[in-house]
Length: 264
Image 1 (cartoon, rainbow, N blue to C red):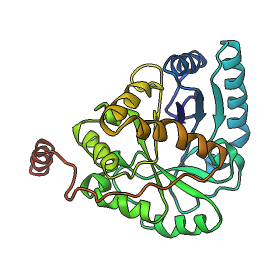
Image 2 (image 1 turned 180 degrees about the horizontal axis):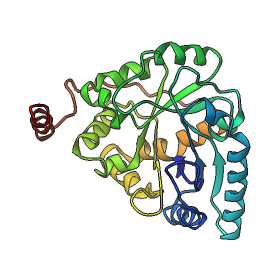
Image 3 (image 1 turned 180 degrees about the vertical axis):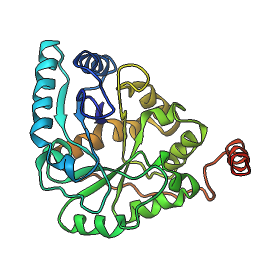
């Protein structure tokens, strides 16, 4: 399995806090059956684009740590870019594995930026392909799952968090993740690991869950084949989507809690 989304570079963002924790995350990934890990530090704004030297040095240390641990998994460099008007892709680390094609992008957790559609279209004309990180955790998609289908129709790829399928982020997020899988809208499942405890680099359990419900071929495509193609900068084979279940993904309990909070 290939993990395209991790925050394993210590001290750079809200991921690993120390080299000891980063090493433990590497060990955990290998024990889980992960063959490749992509370090995707948060790039939150224009200032972070200028931190390439710092990121490169941290990544070089990560490679050395992996070798010192005697691990066989491979590590790659990328980024998780927060969507904003000044987003650019003119440096190798901004695409996954430096392939110059696929980039991981994150929306605000409560909306889809109004400029995103036009921006993505322009970038795709230049040969880039956006991969939207964890849409199942975004309030706009939770309210309207059909929005995900619109994104995919326009060329955007979707990456689910493995923890979402295990219920780590709650029942509503899990329900939406399952809806997106049912509609064949998901291209990749990754860990979005942030440490060695609560949000570890962990894919095996979710691989099994997907395999049992949607078939082993689907699990292989989402955890192995598509990530491999993305890292290599190769074309990802399209799968004909199915209609998305109408209505939003909020459970009745969640709706009542939101109504309660709104009235107090």
